[in-house]
Image 1 (cartoon, rainbow, N blue to C red):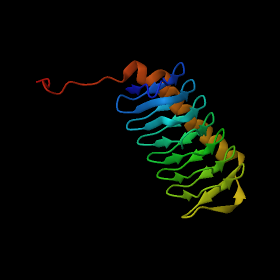
Image 2 (cartoon, one colour):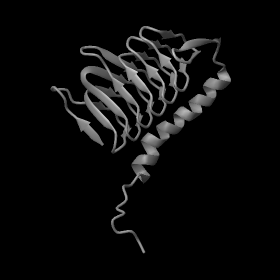
Image 3 (cartoon, rainbow, N blue to C red):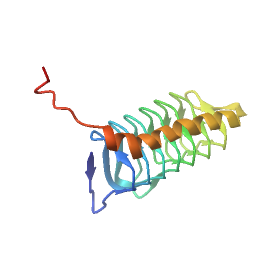
Image 4 (cartoon, one colour):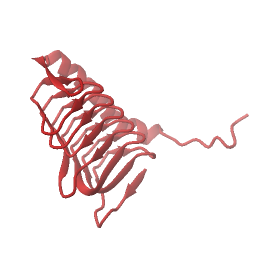
Length: 182
């Protein structure tokens, strides 16, 4: 893993959190307990602060940044899908951000809010609790999440906690392929 001090700030990484070798965690950041930080993720607290709560999943190639002197907050039990971008925003507990989505400055995704794959959430937009935002620019769908949907996502969220705290630390090994076995 690439963990860097920046401008006198050292990242805080919670117990049981897994950070992949190709991920970067930099500067004024705090990662909670049992988080999964996937390959290629970039969590860049160089001139703003990044805070991520317990048991959140930052999947492959996610980018998180904040404006100077401001904070990007990600709650606990959040799923950040592959390749999404968060910039100077707030994502509350249990939210799901789809693959390739973009969350812009000062936007707020409330508890159990969902941003669909590829959606673009503009500055200052809010996704209320248990609502779904889709499209470019993102607009709210006219329904709220069901308990069945949330239960299904809790199952997926637990898979990433298990990957971070059990599977990867025990079984993830870099292979030297310069001398392959015969």
